[in-house]
Length: 65
Image 1 (cartoon, rainbow, N blue to C red):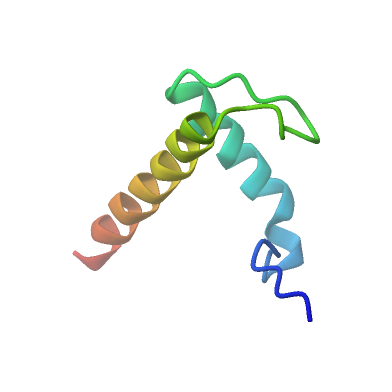
Image 2: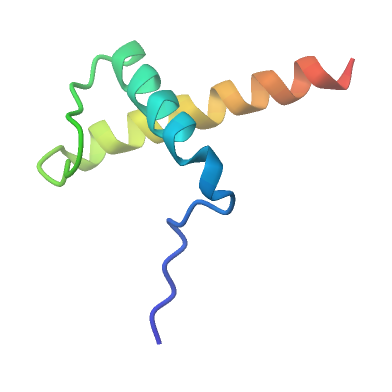
């Protein structure tokens, strides 16, 4: 049984999430390319994911006001 949690829950958001990921990667100095990026280091991938989470939390906090 495969349990892939990397699926976009809202298919219409796929393109926006891809742009968001590229923006966050650029902000932390990771050069992502379209498509497969399995050649980046775990540290780079973590930096991108961490930046994404940081920005999502900031947006959520702004919306709480």
